[in-house]
Image 1 (cartoon, rainbow, N blue to C red):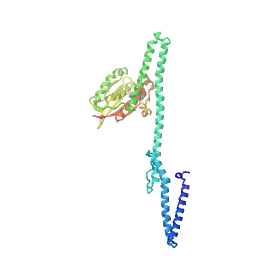
Image 2: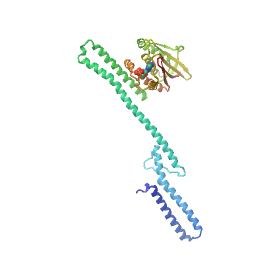
Image 3: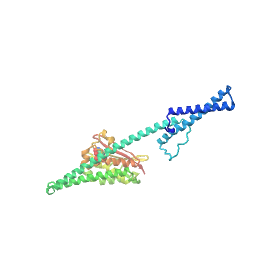
Image 4: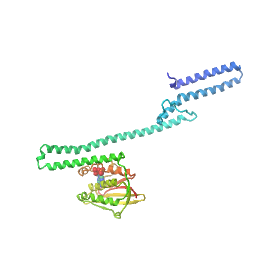
Length: 349
Ligand code: ADP
């Protein structure tokens, strides 16, 4: 049995033995040296007993119990002791047990939160990996089918060769879009894609995006314009390339999921320190149950249309990442058969 590791019972036995032996010796010494046997001898013995037991208990409590508690306390606080360093001197006048009790409860709470976060991250990682492989599988599987059919003789069949080659090419485009978008997300998350803000006219940027999406808009017979009073300059302070990506994703979604002969409108609103930018369409709208998950990676409402339009399901996740990297917010509101509005803020320049 190690002396340092006494149980409370052994500690009590040790203390009472030490105290009684010491008192016996002191009593004997007083009796022999001073030959006192009067009534005040009783008082002296009480006084000495009190002092000796106080000292013995104080020392043993500190040595056997508080030092160990302090060690636990330091461990949960991540305060590393240097090798061979003994725990700091403990002031046993403080209510150290209550203090440590509270610390341990706080520590347990924070560990529980950490654990829940780790579990969430793990679930997210598993789902994400499943989604990525699922998304990659379909275009790869399609390309494989078309190419093998062509190799197995289809190449010389004029009725399918051109068609299958262009279908394989379209699937390759989808594949490349998914991989590109995943790359952007991962670079935004690791902080590799820094936000490089500058002053620019967001109205002018929207005009350029209208021009670049004109062909797509004509194909969907949807017109693009500014809301009343918004056909003028609005200066913001943001990363122009990344905001171009945000607006391109939102406007191109309004074309992909809009109605034939529909309308996409852009509005700008002055909000003191920020400019609110809204992209509104008069498409079919999005059911309310989908709205909270809309910005998740690979979340699609209209799966068929998204795939046929070559959507990766990552567009809105990228948009949200970019806006949040600017320290701003994005939101969506939608009414079935009326349309959808995406709104985000940017710092006013
Ligand atoms: P995708 O590549 O599929 O377009 P996004 O992340 O850009 O992916 O959008 C996620 C889903 O949200 C889309 O699949 C679509 O169902 C829905 N969505 C996005 N924008 C609109 C919109 N303006 N109107 C209706 N539905 C939309």
